[in-house]
Image (cartoon, rainbow, N blue to C red; front, side, top):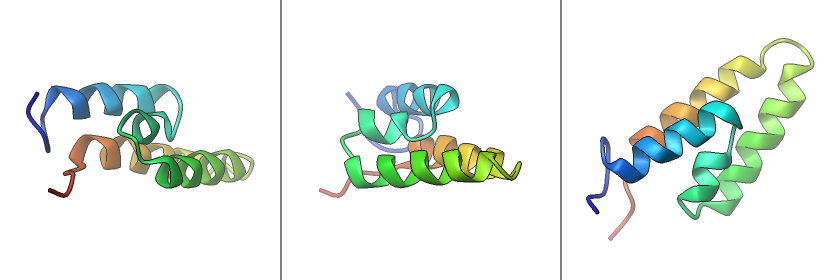
Length: 68
């Protein structure tokens, strides 16, 4: 499977993050970032700004390039 932006793994991760912020990062094996995204989105949805974190989560999962 190819890696980096546009790869099928990143597309799947972005789709996962679309439904639950942080799930895409978890699929990519980035546990700490997944927790950060989920907690921030959950906390900020209370004050109507969670959609910003939600979008950030989707973009972060889609554009992620693993280190070699």
